[in-house]
Image (cartoon, rainbow, N blue to C red; front, top):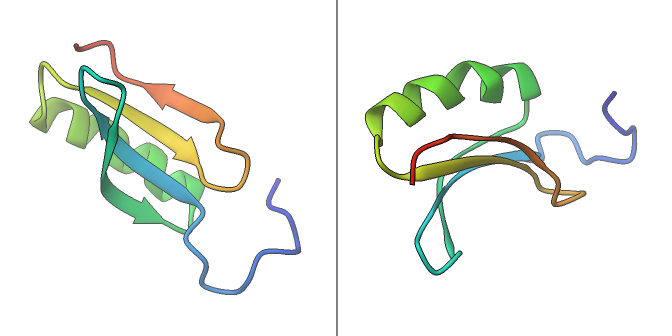
Amino acid sequence: MDSPNHAAGEFRYDIMMEDADGRNLRLESTRDLNKAWERFPALAAQFRGVRLVLLNRQTRDILAQSEDF
């Protein structure tokens, strides 16, 4: 699952707030995907009406996004 070429302690996942222009504001970063999955719903509930995305820093893949916007 995780690539062995990551530096120890490197942040790998970002939870970002997306604005109407498609720009992103980083809310949290984590090294652990499970921790990111745990935090995502809590942050989405806190920021209702705003789209949040969970992003893999290395691949830039969007792993999850909230429905709000």
